[in-house]
Image (cartoon, rainbow, N blue to C red; front, side, top):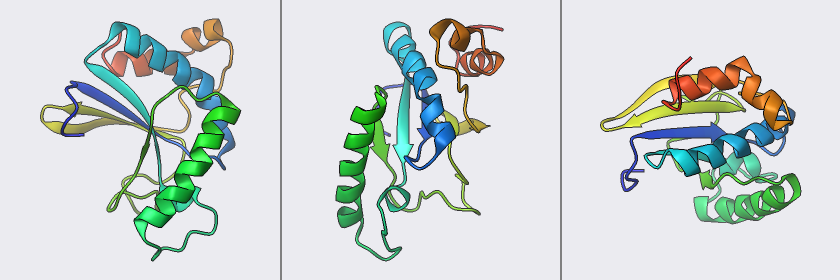
Length: 153
């Protein structure tokens, strides 16, 4: 992340086994397109924990092995569910764990990058609506856009 020339970064933590995550995809795709078009100093990424995404991955399995499995699963997930948001894979010490920074999915972290600082954490989906006009009218989407510096309330 240090190499990214951005002011704001949104990281949406996703799991292919999470129904609210699936339902949030149309909202994430819509937001990602708007961010890419109108906010060049902002970015939205989908983030997955490879140990959570890989079927039967053991905690002590080498990261590279688990990453290969997770990457294959997420490529299929991207195709099957129409995910347009770029996908990143977590590395230690970041994990989806009960007592960690990220406790479940979906969860969206908003960060300022200079200096790197977490300033907001959305627990749950931003919106589970599927029609663009309904997504844009959703109060949680409006709040996300306000928090992420995309517009005012």
